[in-house]
Every structure is written in C-alpha cells, then in structure tokens.
Length: 116
Image 1: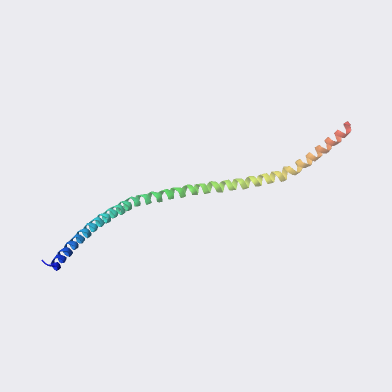
Image 2: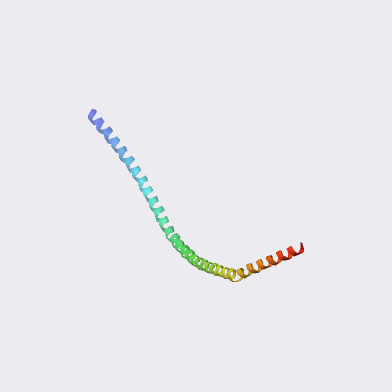
C-alpha cells in the first residue's frame, strides 16, 4: 500500500461520512416539512369554521346596528319635534307672558310708590 492508496481510502471514508451526515440532515428536514404540513393542514381545518363563525357574528352585528340606526333616527325626529313644540310654545305663550309680567311689574311699582 502506497501513499496514493492511503489517500484514496481516507478520501472515500470522508466522503462516506459526508454522505451519512447529508442523509441525516435530509431526514430531519423531511420530518420538519411533514410537521409544518400537518400544522398548516390543522390550521386550515380550524380556520374555515372560525371564518364561518366570524361571518355569522358580523351579520348579527350588522342587524343590531340597523336596529340602532332606526332608534337613532326616531330620537332625532322626536328631538326635532320637541324643539319645534318648544319654539311654538315660546312664540305663542312667551310673548303675552312677558307683557303680563311687565304689567304686573308696573302695577307693583305703582302700588309700591303709593304706600310711601
């Protein structure tokens, strides 16, 4: 056995170790890919019911918001009607009441001056 044969045996051994290491890395990578695929599959399976539930919740929320919109519109209408009623009351009754108040004040002033 000469130096060239010894170098060839060492090279072949190193290559065999390299191939074994590469096979181990590839096996671990295959397991990792299988685990990732299972995780993605499970996530996809649980995501569909979650999205369905989210859709139903959104529909229910929209129905409730429509009811609130109706209530809000009614409150706005009632407030406008009340403001109109107060304005009419103030215009109709307020002016004469001010005049009556002025008359009472004037009469009270005159009666107060007579007592002195």
